[in-house]
Length: 167
Image (cartoon, rainbow, N blue to C red; front, side, top):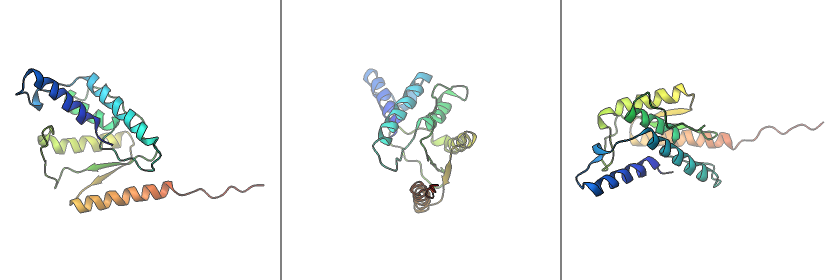
């Protein structure tokens, strides 16, 4: 599932560039209403995808992650984006900032606060009792751990309870 926040960022930047072609990402401003809209739209898209019947839904972000980004742009006092309850069995795979180069794609922001953002995600997930795993090491190590975590979660969900005893 793609990140709706990226789409929203691209749209805001494009609208600003219509008035001034020299506008860059630092000129984009955000409001609480923007984050509420992003969280709601992301959740609606996830819900629709979850109803398609696949046992696995992988999302780049969700409404909960949107609250952390809101914190980044508007400060800790802003709470417009309300996280939805996670889907049953949700596991957050947090990619550690260490050992991964920052690659600018034209709209990425925050290279200077990567460590802080990782800490914010871990703290928020822990505070809200969300299930999460920190992916560290090489790309292969991260992929291996993510694959094992997801595989175990899928295997656990595929098990049945013991049969009921009829009396």
